Length: 451
Image (cartoon, rainbow, N blue to C red):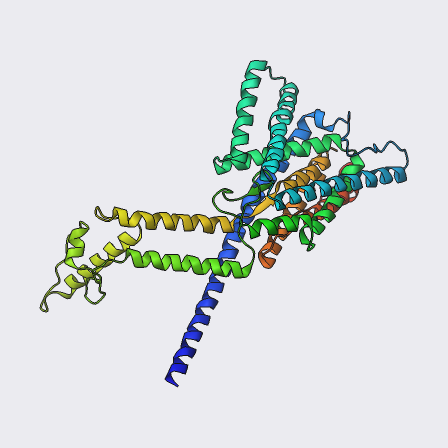
């Protein structure tokens, strides 16, 4: 009977510890979830702001003097039906091309053709950082009438492109890598705005949102298969495709499987207990007033041994000795090592630092560069008409949609598409503001009525 009661007590204690761990995980999710929402708002807002500023100040990206090869129908018909038909055909072709390229990438990743994928991404980054950036810089210099010789321009472009290639495809400061990812997203969005027909752009935004929904949530969707394969292999998705709020090269992607997370937590707890056991002094018995630290232990580590007061001594002296022992133990536990304990404490500090880096990586939120691109395309296209009410409405709508997406991510704890909610809100706000709000405010302004 006593054995059974002891077993029931252990089970209750184990369940209580599990409940406490779950409550702690929930608190950490809320804390770091809000933190990473803000950390994603800043780059998304910056990318959209760069595109809007460029569209507003440089006419090159609003002039239609050519189209992409993926949009063979140029909306030359005079009727609305013909324009809608051409736009639907262009959107279907564009989504089909994206689907084929995504499936091709998944097949390459499935069969571990990493060199081919790296070569493909490196060529794309080279074209964006050198060719498109050169065109952009030339248009900026021309728009603001800034003289620049070709030697200086060559040096600037070489340094800009070379540093970007190193930061994106190898290693570099986190802020610099994030800045380059924002720049190439903005450049790609400007290319889409310039070379896509007007009506086709809106149809492509709606079609790509539906495609993103299917590709991520369907059991055999290409993006879902890609993410699951990367999680099974414990490998990170390529940094050239993903914007991350934390470092991309420390460890692999955080596994979304709850069982895997529990196993990982148990391993970390076991590692922490092993480190604490290894850091415990050999002479510590825990039975005396000095916290289990003997005089020999103090002398071997360079501390002054504290004398234990006799029975007739002052009680405050005894408490001070005990406090000294505790402060010494706390100093060692925090990594402030004594002269004799450097070799013992360095591995523990390194292991703790590695564990903190792993925790920070698991809490990091990742957003595909395609999401940056299409967010910026929507806001940039809205700003091309010169209506700031529509531009600001689309800007706010995309941020609201992103916030709701991250809220659903915290609830469901699995990969979710970031385009559908934001793009849907953006399209609704765009057409509602341009067709309802702007005419209403113009009518009020013409009648000198102010609300």
